Image (cartoon, rainbow, N blue to C red; front, side, top):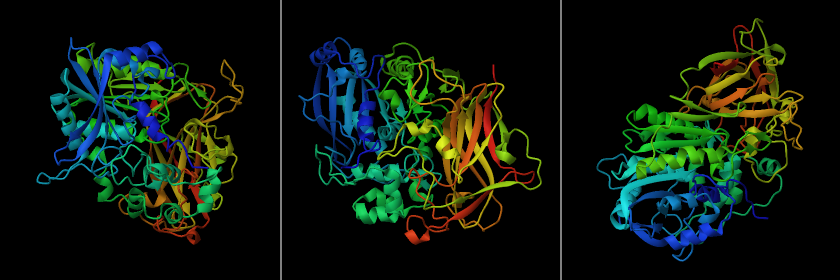
Length: 629
């Protein structure tokens, strides 16, 4: 069996995401649309020259209509702009992309430097070239040269260009925005790869997201020496139980020794840079979003396991560093790229009461590009358009986080309680034994692939484990709506020199809860994961300079969880779970202060973890509470 999971099919997700359009159903087949598109468009393929002579393969779909001039909409991708050949067309007519064709856009896809049919050498998250005197290339430069060639060489264009993409193409959309080409008017980075150390894809707060990184680079990582229309041979790994496979493979270094054999360049870089150093900082687009000229529409999912952090934080960085930019934010109740793949009416067992993807396409995305590229409609988009799950309603805010929210401490208490008042006892703590040989699983079921649904999964399986601490409120007498960044604020001691801390924010449904149309899954008492995040303990004071714990010493571990937009309804409960493993989502911490990327199987040890909740050492969370109306 060849290993394949949702990270490997991230390539197809991102190709599909290029088809983000307004209205219609994703799976709908319409022969009339297929006939109309082929009769009214033609396809050309060109090798577009860059400033250093390298040529990038570009597929261009051009309207035959010459009665008006047409805007250009580009996606630059490492995932292939196939099918190759001017007579070969993707099935645009089976996707919502057909509506962009009806609007008369010139649609462009390009293989980025070093991928598929483009020349040059590929580099993951290629750094922005900030040296004035350097002749080196970067993605803003390639974007600029591509846009410049298109507006000068494609017949019938109106001189206005937009760029968009989901996930890795979202990174390239951000890079295009940094080019500031005068023809570039609108850019939409969607679920954008942004910061691969702090919160996107491969690391969260310095902890390696092992399963996602390994799975992705099994297919994406093998080198492509020369331009080709054929995919590289993936690393083949056979198993049915991901928990068992990752546990038996052992220490992180074993994955290279057994499967990659030093052939995956970026995996080697991951291993060489365990801390937040200059190498990582040069690859963080948030450090370079100053003086951005085009209008920006940042789009993300509340339950995106991969690049939800990137959407929240890229928007925030542009707000802070490029104050003159028309910068908007949309966050819907979606998994990674779900708004491009389904109607967005549910995720796993959780239902959202509407086809949220279609609403977004109809009301936000297409109008955004139509205004800036065609002068059609208006720009009355709010600063932030956010779906609040639980309540299941879209909200419009004039800033994010909302100015109406107030940060309130909620405290862990004796007896598994959770309350708004600081604990009274002089001495009080809860403890568990964290055993790396039996880590807490991230999901209950046995699977070979990581699910997208785990971001809203039922957490009852975890709450029953002795190595997971559980704290919950009494039944809520009124709605509790959270809108903004959640901050975990823990006072801890451990028996060893390092440990991870995973904090999960959970919505506990009433015991008699059910949806109007009942599902097979028992929803009464459901513990919905709303937000979870890991903090690698050794980075508690600095991500640049990790520090060992002193065994037995009470220390402060404070960290951010990505933003939240959720309403805990009257009759529900708010639950917090605390644990020290989340496997195989996160690599196991050996619970010894070592370079985890280089440690061996013999370095793993048990640790006694204490979480304090007394009058002096009061652990809790800082919650962004939105007042009820």
